[in-house]
Length: 111
Ligand code: HEC
Picture 1 (cartoon, rainbow, N blue to C red):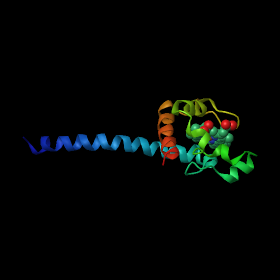
Picture 2 (cartoon, rainbow, N blue to C red):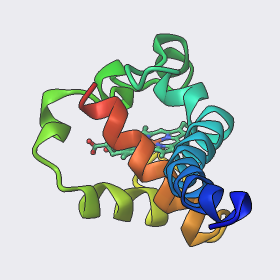
Picture 3 (cartoon, rainbow, N blue to C red):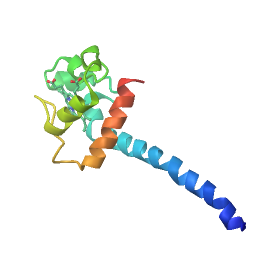
Picture 4 (spheres, helix red, strand yellow):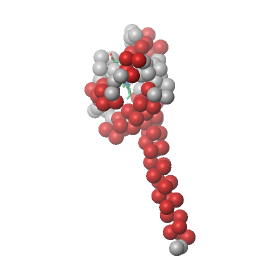
């Protein structure tokens, strides 16, 4: 076996391991850009934004107990279609980016 061939499995493993990491980074970057101003960097919600929007701060907390029972599909629908003061992102962001975002939101909900 040539040296190059011997390295091939490692190269494949590197690509396979880097894939999910990059998706997670993309989700986090997108969340920081589009969502953190209202929902906070940690998903706990921005108290300042709640005051500004005249909202119950709990509505911005993605980790609140009411949302704990929501399924990922239900939450995705809210992100796509919007709800009250929550903007709709279905036409603003590509589906793949929303996928990455929702995976990141799941991490924030279940730290
Ligand atoms: C302008 C502030 C604002 C921004 C920006 C924002 N949201 Fe929201 N979001 C809200 C509000 C307000 C609600 C609560 C809506 C309601 O139930 O009345 C909400 C609700 C949600 C919910 C549903 C939570 C639940 O338990 O029902 C999810 C999930 C969510 N937002 C994710 C996101 C994501 C992901 C982004 C970025 C792409 C984002 N939000 C950007 C204000 C915002």
